Image: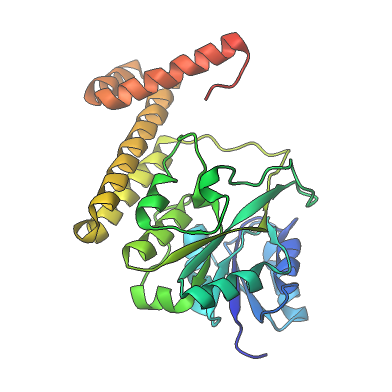
Length: 320
């Protein structure tokens, strides 16, 4: 096989039921040479066996397995290390893509010199059927092709902000940009890891382009229940934000610094909400009161969310 244009990397965890669909969709890409790199994160089910079987049937597939669970960041970092394509495309194990997606993105990246290209998404159910008429990003800000700088990336990734969140997008990344900047996934995170990888690249001077096309199929599982955030999750976000500031703070523009400061405040508010809620549910009322007193801004945010939840119950509507 010739050197691939795109290495599609898949971090797999308990993905036996849907991994093959993701892999087949990547291999069906038209107009580009692809390979698919699967790193199984020590799944307890048949994910690893399925990945090995797929690799045995197609030389374009590479499959590895971790002996112990390391999290999605570690699995993706290993996949990146194995990649040889000019570009790397992120694909979640339960998602899929259209046949023309990668060729469209590679063409745009080659034409513009962008190190990162992201596109809009279509939400589908587990059968691959579209959910609703709207695309994932709905605002006018992403109705047309555009560049995305660091300040924009940060501004559209504030937690609990009622606007499009572009951190969910699955980018195409020039492998050379990762090698030149040394950017990798933060292994201290088990969610929001994509956000910090792209933020590191943008802070390192890399260029990002957005395409308003919809080639990524983002699966919403109707039967699944979202995991409730816990204080350790939100604390991990704060720690990652501090590490990002330590790496890049001195070289950020004024607009970048303002956006990062707003995001940090938003993260502190969410952490305050989650930690206070956790303390109240555990009947650690002294801890809850202490948190309220120690962070007035966080307390105002938390009480506001509690009030909207209460009002929503009265009106029988979801206000948060």
